[in-house]
Length: 454
Image (cartoon, rainbow, N blue to C red):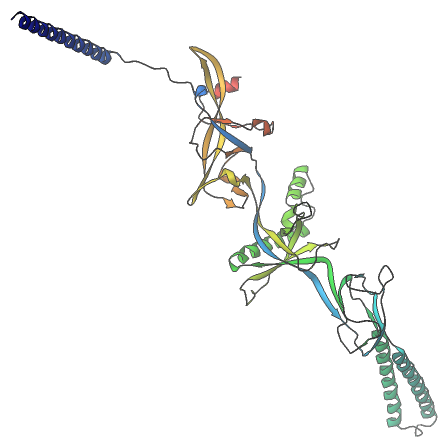
């Protein structure tokens, strides 16, 4: 009985202690909840200077005259090709000589009027001498007849006199033919050119007008590129604009000579007088470098397309004073279809989303720098600003943005894909940038006046 009483007392004590503990806990919780409703805890926001900064790389940009190009591939052809031969039949006795004194051969350079080959001309010389003798005889007979007619008009009839006059004209014609045949026995170069093919040897006989030499005029050469009909209209418009600029220059050559500013403007517009094309030869040198680019000029736009391909064979004129360009070389031409003022932005800086494009630039903002509860004055803060592009021209490595589209001083080229508008950034390549680069100031900065006072 005593053990049962002790056990019951023990359970009662535990129950009372538990009830007291629950009551104390409920009381404390209710008190904290009431204090939380009556007072709010205010946390000091983190200063903008101390906020995490996204690392980015920046490239400077500036307004310049940008060339909008259209790229096409083609082959180089000679400026003009000549296939020449003797107009008369005969045997070739000798060939002309080159600068080294050797007989002319493929690849030799010839000047206009230079002898290429000579033919056996003994027969032509004899015919010329015969024609000269005939003229002398007929002239003598005609003079005797005229003297006899003056003495006695009935001694020579009109028909006889007319016959001697006709014979004299025929003899003179025969002399001219003989002289021409003698001159044709010597084959001369019609222009300054290079021999591409020599088809005869000394001692061979040739027929009239048989091709014996093929010459190529290569002081200038033509790059012929195939352009689709969707782009030929743009090239034609550019050609007409260049012609108008060239005509205006010829009419008013001294119009821009009054001031230094006008002279600079005329110099900058000089390329508008030429339908420029930048040509890059295929292949590389022994060190793996590409050959230097060549500046050419669009020479002709055909009126009709090739019926086999449906493409237009546009000809680009290339200078070849050193004669390093040969027919058959493959090259790529960047034809300048327009020249506009704008920004040439690296293609890596532009973000394309479906049909939209945008980029990020860096603008400078002044903000208060704080340490604990002290304000240390204004400090520079760099933020990324998103710029949506409405107009742009994709040029491969660069994207051209017109000047009126926006105003830029720099663009973010790395780290822009995870940025948000107005996000704080840290430029990682400040040492690579030019010392004169100054980031744009934020238009909504609240401390612009402070910066002006400083």
